[in-house]
Structure formats: structure tokens, C-alpha cells
Length: 62
Image (tube, rainbow, N blue to C red):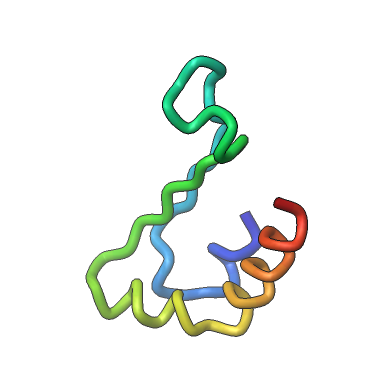
């Protein structure tokens, strides 16, 4: 995933589809799991321009 290459604090990113029949059905169609080494890495990710751009794209499609 491109974000992992752009943001040093990201250790890994996994994503997938939400299975039909789960409690998230009707709320979301995809899920992601982003892993960091520490809370500081998460803070860096939250405010990183690449993440903010990605977040805007996703919100506009949901």
C-alpha cells in the first residue's frame, strides 16, 4: 500500500472486505488495520499529509 511507503512510522497496513452478516454490514464495506511501533508513530500518521489526503478520498466515496 502506498501510504506505508510514504509514512515511516507505519509498520504494516492490511485491508479487506467486511463479510456479509457481520455487525458492520450496512455501516462499512471495507476495514483496515494499520500497525505502528508506538503511540508516537500513530500520532505522526494521523497528521501526515499523505494520510490526510487518503482520508479525504475515502470519506468522499463513502
